[in-house]
Amino acid sequence: MATLASVVRELQIEWTAGETISGRLARPRRAGDVGIVLAHGAGVGQDHEFMVALRDGLAGAGLPTLTFAYPYMEAGRKAPNRLPTLLAAHRAAADRLGEYCERIVLAGKSMGARVGSLLAGDEGWPAAALVYYGYPLVSLGLGGPRDTSHLGRIDAPQLFFAGSRDRLGPPVLVREVATTLASATVSVVEGADHSFRLSRQADPSGSGLVAELVDVTAVWLRSQLGPQAGGAR
Image (cartoon, rainbow, N blue to C red):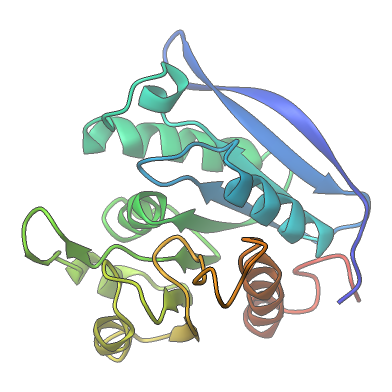
């Protein structure tokens, strides 16, 4: 897949009255009308190397991609905010990307994936599609699966990436959930854990699987949303 040159713009996003969070918008010089909001996971922020590589890779595939910091991460805290705050920040980031793109894909890593799905499923935010990079179906602290009933209330197509070694989103459970949804696709990444890392033996450089994630995402989005989902036409 051809890589398109892109530029990264720093944004300040007002998520509640008088309070802002930072965003990084990677915009290809040639793009279609579809953009991606890419939310980070609980433990690492938007400037983590995985998030940066994924953001820039998606932009290079012709998909404007916005990352952002949830308020706790913006403040330098480790513990995530309560869900209403996470949802408010996520909604603000999605609305902000709507100033640049006509159709918005809600994508996220782990916690960010779940918050995006709740924004669409419980609050009705009109996502064109959803992409989950490691959906956290299992809460290790609770010892069981989370409620996923809201996923069935999402009208848009959904793409689940699951590492074959992912303890929080085991492929067998992800497939079980996907079969209950109207339009869902599961892509299993062999050898990957929840962070999409391979074993040191399989990936001595530690470069991971970002290129694979980008390529599968871009091809799937074009199959679902049309060739205008990206700059390659």
